[in-house]
Length: 398
Image (cartoon, rainbow, N blue to C red; front, side, top):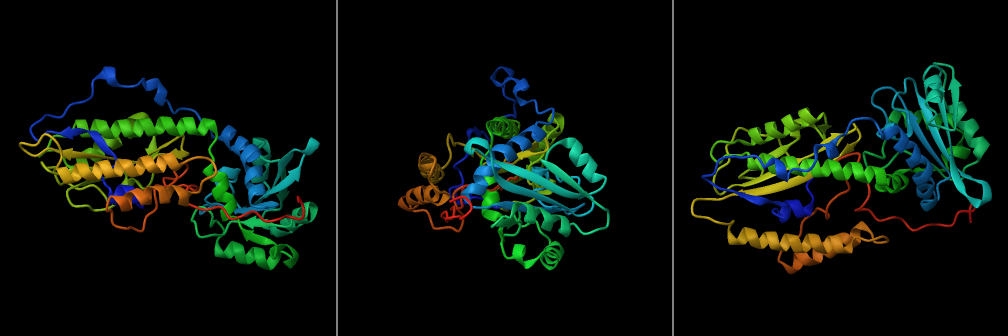
């Protein structure tokens, strides 16, 4: 997990609205202050329906934005493409090719025609799931590339996006798969291939209303548990391992998973910053700042990534030190500037610049991180902080 600049430099921007007294006993928030537990019911599996809607409604717009006619993914058992579950090839056995072709529909509407070339067996189950427009069975052990070439001849795409790129999310093709594809497909098709990374970033960055609701509820629950963990802490007794155990127990009781690697979730730090690391047995002490970086995974698909901070009052203190409060106010001003800059049509760089101006005005040192990061299917999802390349003319749909 890489920290965003705001969390790393102005590190009390998310300070929890509570200060732990050095002489107080841990306590839980009153029952009357808690939201209804029914709101946090994450049973069932909404993903299949949401996935179909995302392909049907969001993928055409993303392909148009980047002037892509076809998108090719290559799936396999184990070590699968990071986007396998997003297109329906999470249960691939032998090599399978998933192709999405941009098509013109009736009355000037546009759509997607999806084709999978898959070994027999898995091809049968794919057809039963009704995810794709068409499933082509191939004999087990035979090459998938002749079927891919046939579909390219059928749809004649000018621009074919493949899963290569700098982002781990978009870089799904293994070296062996790429080499096999390039040696098997005619040059007429391989020379039309481009990185799918811009397409993937655009497609993943937009979430459906149903997804936003799921993510909002998951975020509420994540933040609530972090505050509860702080409320239960006893200075001089509670360790960062205790805070982590508290949150892990909440996850187990609710039946939700880890937002990222369990060894580093939650990451809890008291005193000297240790970055994203495993919890230790060090007890929190008066004068400590506590940082908890915590995320959960709901429905096995959507994750949260939330940090909350608290300060342990030292004897005689009624509030944190003045310099800490000054950072808090400066951080709030920076985050509000970033939020105000967020509107349709602006880039992540625009949002970053808005916060950077406030940071510079408040004397913050320059740092390498950008403002915030996307969240959704991964704790560091795809979207905001990346510019979209200018559109180019496309002969097929000009």
